[in-house]
Length: 209
Picture 1 (tube, one colour):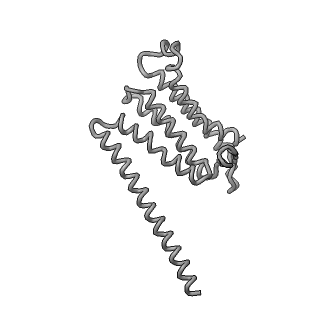
Picture 2 (cartoon, rainbow, N blue to C red):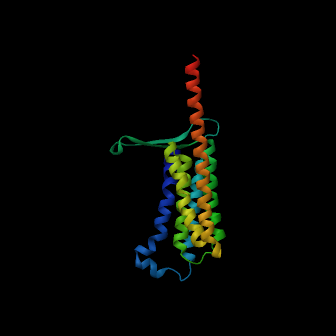
Picture 3 (spheres, rainbow, N blue to C red):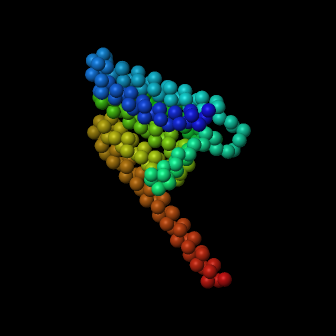
């Protein structure tokens, strides 16, 4: 059961993005849409609440008395050189997924009164953040975790740059990106230092022996 629910949970934010832009594809829906943005906010709240409900069902179905991964699924892509997509949940990732799906509806409720322009794009970017966060918590591959985790920066940068506070929003967006790249640089230096230290210790042991 967890396997199916977890796959549905990962796909749901993408379906929500499509549903937000659906009125643009069908003029009949666009004509029946209210003049204000309540139509889009209703879609956002219903979709995000459903995603939170899914994560809650997964939480209730999760066996908390075992340390093994649950809901494991493997997708083999022979076309791309035998790449395997493996995802599942454990005791830590289920908490992070639950927290993510809980915060998204709260973000929408807090933004309804202040966000008046490009509401569709705003909602879609938050669902994209939710999708990337869930993928980063559920995928087992280290490279995919890094890709999804760092990809969260892109919608965050756009949100800060467009809907940020007055004239400081552009500067804040670039500072957000700059600080993050400093963190990446520090991690890279630390990893390189550890690699050099380990290599030096191996060479020293080889010389001594």
